[in-house]
Every structure is written in C-alpha cells, then in structure tokens.
Amino acid sequence: MTTSYEGRVAVVTGGSSGIGLATVQLLLSQGANVAFCARGEGRLRDVVSVLQRDYGTEKVLARALSVLDAGAVQEFASDVASTFGRCDLLVNNAGQGRVSTFVETSDEDWRAEYELKLFSQIYPIRAFLPMLKSSKGAIVAVNSLLAYQPEMHMVCTSSARAGVQNLIKSLSMELAPDVRVNSVLLGLVGSGQWTRRFAEREDQSMSREQWYGNLARSKGIPLGRLGDPSEAAAAIAFLGSRAASYITGAQLDVSGGLSRHI
Ligand code: NDP
Image (tube, rainbow, N blue to C red; front, side):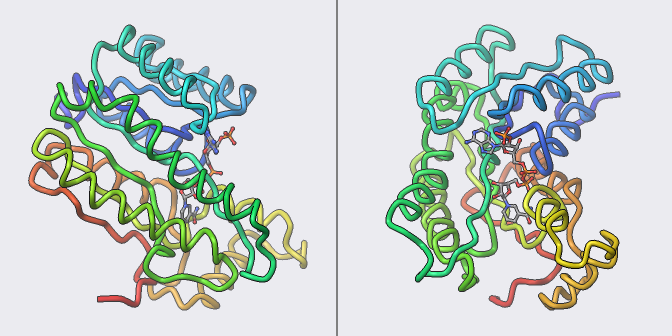
C-alpha cells in the first residue's frame, strides 16, 4: 500500500519515549525510514529492538546522543546521509519542561533552559538543513502552548518557548520556498513529565485515570482529558506530510481546547 511517507526519510529527536516514540511508530507505519536519537542508551536499545522486529532492521536507525552536543548531532546527520541518503522531515521533539517560579529560578536554571529550548532546535536544523533543502523537506518543532499562555510555575520554560516560536517563524521565511517550518503547540499530553508526576503523586491510592481526570478538570481542559502521545504524533505527521504542502510558519494547537487565545 502506498502511504504518505512511503520512500521518505524522517528524523525524530527524543524518539525513545512518549510523543517522540509515538511519532517514530506512526511514521514507520506510514512507510518512512526513520532515524531517531535520545541520550539514554538502555531505553534506546530496547525501543530499537522492538521497532526493528515490527518494521525491519533496514527501516530504523538510532543513535545515543544529546541534541545539545553539536558535534554528535552533526555526526548523526552524516550517519543518516550514509544510511538513508536523504532527509525529508526533521521533528525537533527532544526535551522536557522545567517547573519553577521566578523566585525559585537561578541564573544557571535560566541559562540551562534557554540552551535546551533553543539549541535543541538550532543544532539539528543546522546539521540536517543541506539534506532538507535538497529534498524540499519539512521541519516540525514540538513546542508548547506555554509559548502563548505562560504559567507562573513554569516561568523560564514559558519564556524560552516563546523564543522558539519566534525562531520558527523567522526560519519559515528564511528557508522558504525550499523547506517548510511549522510547530505544534501542546497542552497536556499523557507522556514523559505527566507520567513522572503521576508516579510521584501524593495520594498513591489514586489510579492513573482518576489522577489524569482530576488534572484535566483542574486545568479546565474543554475536552476533559489529557492528550494521548499518538494524538500529538498525528498532528506532527500531518505537518510533515505532503498533505500540508502549502503550510509553513504555522502552529497547530494540540491542547484539547486549553488554548484561550484566538
Ligand atoms: P518524554 O520524557 O516522554 O520523552 C522525551 C524524549 O526526549 C526521550 O526520548 C528523551 O530520552 C529525549 N531527550 C530529552 N532530552 C534530550 C536531549 N538533550 N537530547 C536527546 N534526547 C533527549 O517527553 P514527552 O513525550 O512528554 O515530551 C516530548 C516533547 O514535548 C518535549 O520536548 C516536551 O518538553 C514537549 N512537551 C510535552 C508536553 C506534555 O504534556 N507531555 C507539553 C508541552 C511540551 P533521554 O532522556 O534518554 O535523552
């Protein structure tokens, strides 16, 4: 069956868990060859063996590295070029949020957060740009609604995410017409950080369903629940696909209606 990613090559940063992993799986299921990275070797190895079993060894390439290591990201791009020969889609997903108010945030925290949010975009985009240009490819930045709707308890994450949106808009102009550049704005997705916070919940007798349900109610999410990683992955895959061929410089809100701006 010919699907939208047949014969195409996608790169996903932070592909060993949560939204990144759901994106890797979706793209593989739609026929793409997929390369992904994450820092932790153990989890990466486990995930790769399952994916290679399900989709074939030759479809998957994985490297253990931090996206904040410019040299390692460049080597990753060289490996993708020598293995797959092209790159049609770069999904910049690696990262995590930082919970802290202004008073709690040290200078070191501010620098670390800005470095993570901005250079997790800059290094991969620089490394994969030549291939993206020659394939007339696309970049999707996984960003957060916090960029437009800051939260007091995530002050430096919110601020850095606004900077990422600004960068993505600039790139959508500078890289046009060769490369499309878009972002997804996530609300609360039941992966990574929320799984960790659920594990640390005060009332350990509460089930995941109850805890997530309470969280959705307390946040006032109109759809009444957290998003699933597969729902974020579907939006990412759409923006990267030919179906989105006239979309660049856009942001797709994947927040169950949590966004209050028009
Ligand atoms: P997870 O923690 O489930 O997955 C994060 C992935 O990124 C892991 O594979 C992790 O592997 C990898 N990673 C983290 N830091 C680096 C790094 N420096 N270099 C390479 N890989 C890295 O998170 P989610 O799926 O929940 O989140 C995915 C993205 O979406 C993140 O950027 C997050 O900030 C953002 N987001 C998520 C929201 C949510 O509600 N879940 C809301 C808003 C934004 P390893 O640790 O082994 O490196």
